[in-house]
Amino acid sequence: MRTIIKALIPGCMGLFLMLWPSPLNAKILNTSGTWKLNVEKSDFGKEPKPQSIMVKVVHKEPAFKYSVTGTNAEGQPINVEFDGAIDGKPYKETGTQGGTTVTYKRTNDSTIEGTATSADGTTTEIFTLTVSKDGKVVTRKGTVKGPQGEYTRLQIYEKQ
Image (cartoon, rainbow, N blue to C red; front, side):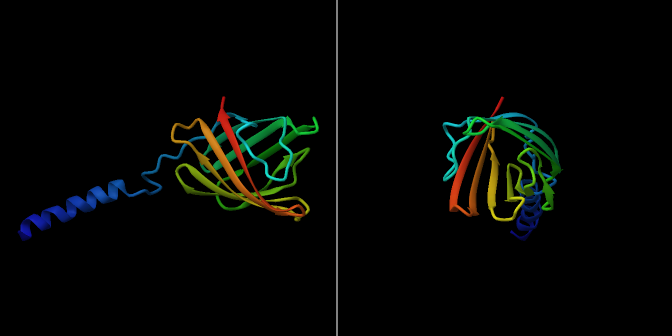
């Protein structure tokens, strides 16, 4: 009996270590490509829905770069760029609506948590980005706190 247990323990430990989620075993989903906001499936809380948003992403973990173009609810152009990393450090967005400081931190192979603070510091959003298992949908859930009070928003992006 002791021989069987001695043989099983290392085998079980090996299997456990193979299945244990770790940076060495994780397959981080690459989000590079073009993503389109599904305006109808999204909910912007107290904010008016934009007419359209496209996001072009270049992702080489931990490097993370994107450009956002689109049209807001009033028909004005949206242009934002980000060049940073998923490393928990703050980086600034640039562009016509730029100035926001954003921090991204990976929590698992398909989820990133982040914080965004407006340029004037009056509005903060804590959010989660989750990539679907098939890599075709990114869901962005956030809680915004600012002059308009506190509210949640949900954005659904589909890979093009």
